[in-house]
Length: 186
Image 1: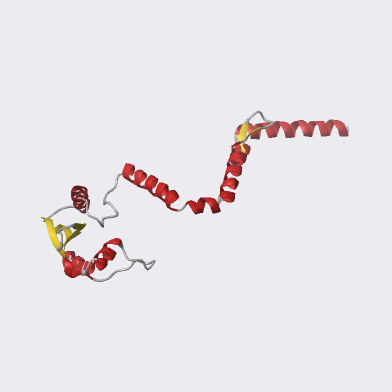
Image 2: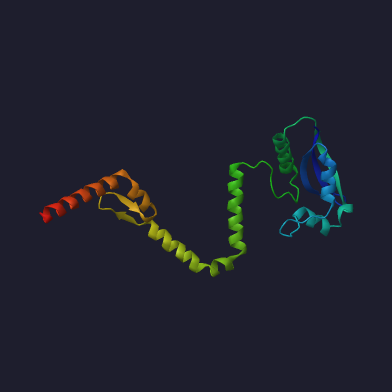
């Protein structure tokens, strides 16, 4: 089945806008799909379509096939697409295909850092929530000494009570209280 890696280029200044890949008969559909206006479920327009709309519409852009393959697995095709994206650095490619765990972690760190920079008012409004989180964290991290000789935190209280060491202690305690009750009743 034929597969393609394609690029959308500006006719005005030969600027690389987008690199994508598709397989089989879907290239014609893909090209047609890119040319129709599109919105996401939330009603926002993806960056690619917004850029194209703001810069003269589809008449000012062209499709170019970078590479055509006959029999290639989708994963390999996405890997090749990723290499082209890293080489050409197009403007509107937001998601990188086949990201490694390290790339995902790095991206998430950058997202949270950027969010804190762009929205400092959120931190100001939610100081009470943060102080409650700190209180809960402190409370849950306090270590409690049990009568059985074990130690636990509040988060692990249920686990501690279900452990054999604590159960054996409870059994011994119950036996001694039962024996003391029997001896006192006689």
